[in-house]
Image (cartoon, rainbow over all chains, first blue to last red; front, side, top):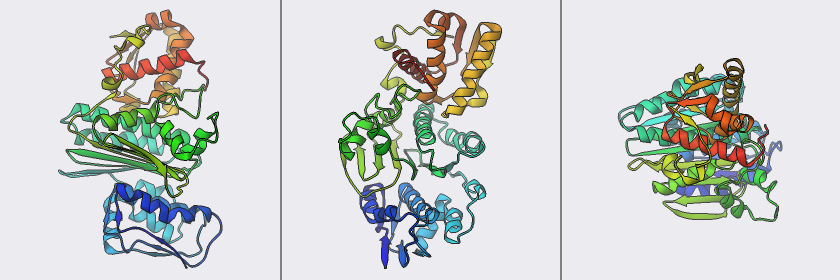
Amino acid sequence: MILFEFPKILKPNSTYELLNSLEQAFSMEEKLVPDVVINLQKVKKTSLLGILLNYKFIEYTYKHNCFRKPNLYVNPYIEKEWERYGFTKLIHSFVSNKDLTERNYKNLKVRVDDRFIIAPQALLRSKDYSDKFLKSEFLPKIENYYKKNDKVVSMIFLCLSEILLNFWEHAVDDTNSILVAEGNDNHIEIACADTGNGIITTLNRVFENSSINRPATLKKAVEKFVTSKKMTNHMGYGLWILNQIAHRVKGRFHIYSEGAYYKNDFGKEFAKKCGYWKGTIIYLSLPLKNPVTLSNIESHDNKKFNDIKINWK
Amino acid sequence: MKNINLDDFGPIISTKESGGKILKIITENLKADNKVSLDLKKIRSMATFCAKQIFGKLYVTLGAEKFFENIEVVNASDDLKSIIKIGIQSAIQENVSD
């Protein structure tokens, strides 16, 4: 029997442990390995990121025929959490081997009450579904929830702009990414994960020194002007902006990709090896007490922009 | 002068497709009217990629003088001003290709 066991706690701090326990699955694509158990029965605490990775793991292994009739063991707590984040129908569609249609993704709904907002958003590339729902459901509800603080909305939307662009442009071979945001008056978390080409693969193609190790590649990825697509409209600002914002508000910014991770936890940076995840995971956690936006980081009045004259009205 | 409001693209511009559509609208109106006024009132944010795709491309194509004379930008927040300048600066430093 091959066991994929989810740890007791699925919080951002335990992602390292989680990825170590799941990495073997990514070498089983199209192998239909028999006698596999995916065990979530021990999970007692979870989080936005934990549930997202739980979903993406199940989606990947089912879609890529990694296992033959795997046994999925869950407990009432994890079922409740799937429901809370809106993933129940998506996961059941895989487990029951039904065709996964866009209908299931459209069941993802933004939930708002006085104390919190949970906002999942499928990033499908077919038709104009994602853009339409993003503009009609996802963004307006976040904007409304945080309407008392304009600067908070600007900070969140700046982060979402860069995350969405990055996932849409880089994860072209994974058409089912899901972005999830969860927040309250004091704090917001945003997570997005795909199982397409990871940051390390795409960036190592352009580094002259291709022997650069994986954690070092991720550390470089958050530097300004580092991009896998030079001489295009990509300019290597997106991850840098996210990291700068996390740094300045004393939040957290994590990237996991292909056996390495980069973490900025409250201003302290780490880049190390971890279990393999095909694709990229991005996690952002921002306190909202002192929001920061791009004009705080790079003001348009900065001397370096002096030569660029724009007719602002 | 042709007034163009980008309300339909708000509140964030975060896809290559949206950037491409906006660039096309501006370019076509510049051809027809010579001058355009872009209203960004409903735009809360924009990916830096899209700023380069739209404003960087226009700046490099028109040149600094014509860009200033023929395009006015209305209701841009300080954040958008920064994003737009970052996009233009990057386009100036490279030859933009798609």
